[in-house]
Amino acid sequence: MKVALIGATGRVGSRLTTELVSRGHVVTGIVMHPPVNAPDTITIVQANAADANALAPLLVGHDAVISAARFVTSDADALIAAVTMAQVKRLLVVGGAGSLEVAPGTALLDSDGFPEAFRTEAQAGARFLQRLRSERDVDWTFLSPSAEFASGARTGHFRLGRNDLLIDANGKSHISMEDFAIAMVDELEKPSHSRQRFTVGY
Image (cartoon, rainbow, N blue to C red; front, side, top):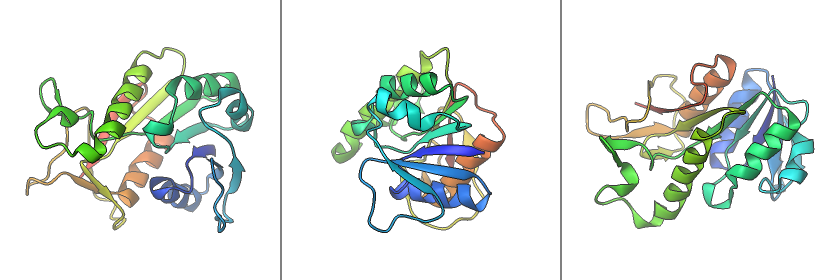
């Protein structure tokens, strides 16, 4: 497939780039600030993803858009408008864990002990998801990682869930960025969460 990846050179975006390219997909990386040492396996273009009119022409001709941008710098309305104008079939979003539930009706970001350093981003992610849930035209998917989300091993062994935070047998909620990328590209290739949020963890 031909995929437009917003935030392609970021921490999560770079893992998605690697996974996409390894599976033979053609990637256009859309970034705000092109890196000095950009990967030569993809095409890098510079654009403000919060500007729908600037972004839309860059998305034309792609089969899907994946957004790996931080929510505090994202604009859900602009992204949806750009995808719609470009007539791209699918939008996949790298979500956050903060909006996952730890008890019925209680999100992780509203639980005791949630780190203040992550609250603003988590709240922005929850608002982004809420906007997607009201969208009727774009075929979207929002993939939330587990609570601990960092670089690590690409194991290919993980569990999928829906709206509840996944916790392993040791009481830990975690997923590597590499395994997250597998789950995201699996969803791209074989859609099973149309207009839904789902999550991945060990």
